[in-house]
Image: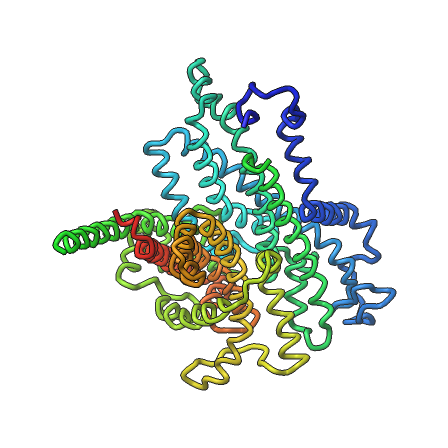
Length: 295
Length: 308
């Protein structure tokens, strides 16, 4: 029980000497699922960064002699309807998916967290207004809102990221607001106020660091959702535009050749599944690792 | 007896009060939803008239589109016109097919939702792996793989298309099994995860221990005492998952070529039919809000303690 009281930890307790971030990391690495997830994510990041070195062929080079060839020693994942190497396209496709996941969640954090802080900390009319807008956005199903936004913005990978980011924002507003409400009555916030700190300082330096764990967990899970959303928008033709490779648009063309070239559908789908599963595993792991109730 | 009657009347009126309060709370949310959906078009960069005109760059055509859709009027005026229309059931006219938007939505709604709700709930309570699989695999990929397996390789089920139940129930069932499975198993995975944790929590509670100590059969303890309480969070989450279901339906319908709600919005997007897009989003949001209201009411019906 002693380790919950700040500053009153017995020095003999070695776990208490660790910084909270270190402890969370150590606990995260004890979870097999999360470790596997991290390895898979790292692999895909390496793939995306070094795509030109790893890809055996140009991902947009077409060849009429190689149309829809099954997997072979030359083309590990086979070729697509335009004779392009699917392995290369899956590698390059990781770029679109990972960037879309990171940037959309970045947008959602950049808009959502300040509004959540404002809403939760100020209360009153501003809180009411922000909360109603958040409710309204949450009432529109995520993907339908993203599709509508992407439609109004016009089809491109950048616009898809903006659309997904905006659709994800209300989750972060609500989460931040809830966290702020529970943290702002804590003694240390009261103490900071008593010392005469301005409101913005309290919000940024006293409240925000303490709600970070919850935001981190949600951000990880949201990246998973954003990657699926990007693939969905690209599948519909609202994301990455051809011939640039994206797992979603690869699945779209694969659907038309399911009878003759089923391998076209296997690899991009498997890639989406693996990356999304990994982010979900890491998110779940982080949630457990950062939960103060589970020591 | 008299006090019991009095008590039940009191709790009924408290419940009606609660329901009335929740319905009143709906109004501001719906108001904000309508503003949000309406402003989608105006908040985003780009001139809607130019987008609607497409390749056409003739200033006369663009001016005509502006006048026709009242885009030349101040935004608040446009909003009032739109809301007035929506309230009287007029969502504007679909630009492409020249059919009132509401008619389109009414035709498509049942196909999308019925196909979605039908299956999946009967899924066996597997392990957490199933839940993770449910949230991590893209709906559209599973759909494509199932078509490959059951339609192309095995030839058991049709690959696409939708047959209404009234036309031929066997063909209808065959055409909805795959899409319903795709949608259903994702939701089942999520609900399973929540039911499991709710049930685990309830089974550890004091009243379950008391019920067992009274000598009730395990069956009675689980069904009468534990299940009812564990259901409360599941009801709310079930309603919240409807959003996922509607989102999932968009792609699932696309893959199975089901002329449903989801396909309607996708087709509208590609035809720059903004009235339809706005209408679909507004209707989905309203359904979602209403179902959450029903979930809240079901909540207090299941848990009498909340009625006070």
